[in-house]
Length: 102
Image (cartoon, rainbow, N blue to C red; front, side, top):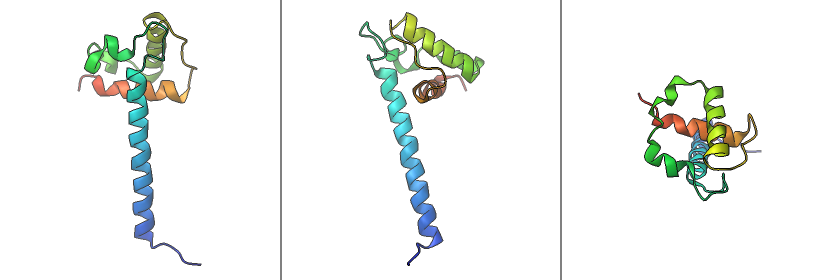
């Protein structure tokens, strides 16, 4: 049986994790722009193009931010709230963090 050299194995693992992180970012960005979260043809990006109006989300912890995201889905987009602690909700809230004031 042949084993990969340690350096090759580490590079392979880093590449896999980097690809996964990129997929997470793109799937969250896709959710942000998707009209499928609601029933009125709008998306998060409709009200918040380039994150406009999300600068102060740094004032909220992750749990409150996820609640706020769900309230927007329910009220502004007229959709079904995402399941609490779901991966979609966590990714979307995490994606929004890029818009907070530094």
